[in-house]
Image 1 (tube, helix red, strand yellow):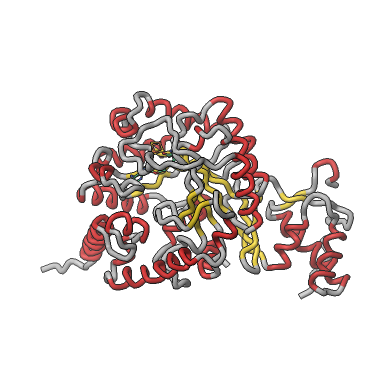
Image 2 (spheres, each protein chain N blue to C red):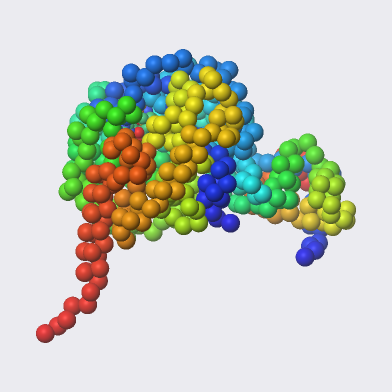
Length: 366
Length: 103
Ligand SMILES: C[S@@+](CC[C@H](N)C(=O)[O-])C[C@H]1O[C@@H](n2cnc3c(N)ncnc32)[C@H](O)[C@@H]1O
Ligand code: SF4
């Protein structure tokens, strides 16, 4: 069975497989569009609670543990918790801005955590654009230096970039930055609202022409570049559950709440990092208890099944929306309603498919 | 299908999983990831159990005994099949002998 087959099986069987833990909302950058809700209050989970949680997750056969934030490296127990995750046999992924990933800390991450992947955010191809978005002067130059160093140490790295109005003119340059570093790069074409529903990050949503340009560059690169087996494998294993959605083999639209969960620094548990509908809190109940017989999770799974109809009813290019029920709920209040960014993506991909097929038509000579 | 016992595996060998190997059980199968190669393998229930037992403490014959008992397989067949499966795992870079005890 393929890895994809296994993941789909985890959805169908409601086997928890991937958990994203936001260790802290503290951060050494101040990104203009950051989706974290910094007004959220609560008691942070203690180191002991994290250890207990990780042990429980390992016992439940969770394979993927993603350490995110905020900036996970800013958590005082980051190394200790990362090492614990390694000892418990998780495939650890770290989502970081990499500002602190240098010197002894970078070495210790490699030696003590040995993550499968370090996912690093790039916000532009120039210091001007990148630093404008992170609102930290010097962050671009420091990031490039840190990436070189982390690569030398043997850390496996992937670059993640969100397309924004501010960086859309630099897409080609961002690919070139990744190529120069010989690192894979993946774009998220959508800016999300803040987790509390605040829509101000959308001020820098990409324009339609920016999105069209990204699609064109991605297509051009795919045609030019023959992926190696290893690149293909990394992409397969490193991709988010969400990218598997709209596939066959399951009556669930995605793995939210059926094979995946996200946990915020205060112990609130959500079906997915994008779907901020709390299903319980770890200060009240252990994760295993929240997972079994939880009516809120049953409802999320029901909605995930219903989301398949939303996509089907959107037509033959519905898949191109990369519809996310969590994003739908934040945008529209309903997890089943198509939101603007998804509709626009579908239209642009449809346009591009049409252009391609017209190009492929034979030209009749007179 | 019965396989021959691989000649380069001794009953007393104690293998352990390579440090970049991660695995979990999904329903009745084991998913194995070799982090270095980003390679995923899916094993059946018996294979998953053998991988779990390859903890650097049990010998090949300890594991064959466990397989025979847990899956109600004839002892000599369990010994042969377990050894050849371990040889496959070794060739795939999933388990290895500690350097000092390798022949
Ligand atoms: C919240 S950050 C946490 C990890 C780390 N601090 C970082 O920036 O990589 C996770 C990812 O979300 C991206 N991101 C943040 N706010 C976003 C938004 N409103 N829309 C889309 N992506 C966003 C970041 O660029 C980063 O790649
Ligand atoms: S680095 Fe990450 S957590 Fe920090 S502000 Fe930027 S997006 Fe948010």
